[in-house]
Image 1 (spheres, rainbow, N blue to C red):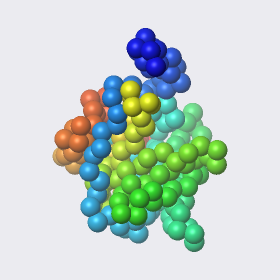
Image 2: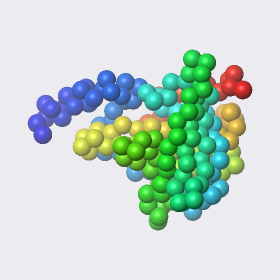
Image 3: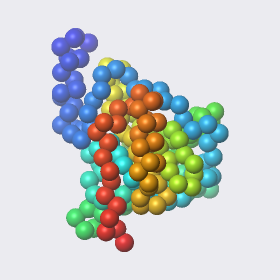
Length: 184
């Protein structure tokens, strides 16, 4: 690959991922939740804060995880966009049985599973999720979410979550609060 092409590649892909910001180099490798329990993680989670994502434009974003008979995970995400509730269903899998907090999620049969790593959770209040994809190990695109079992979390919990991301070499300077008002 020529150096010029390597420099231009992120600019060529930028229109495809306008909400995401590419970062030079490969994805960071943050530690994930030790002794992760998928069973405890199941259920409804609300998006509290996120790195902006092109595929999330609405408000009241939430995801419900449930175990299927074949031990895959049913993932149902929803948002309200222009006054209409939009829902998408996907499938989650444990990609590494030795690291069950490293999940893969796909919302399409034709797309590969995207990383969905649970960095930290207490199962009852909050969870920190990270996803990152390398592009030729030259740069990476990442996503990060702070999730809660309720539509809001105390500011101290959100601040602590941001600290955990930062200490894991994940840039959350662009992280924004999710809109969870007027949802019911």
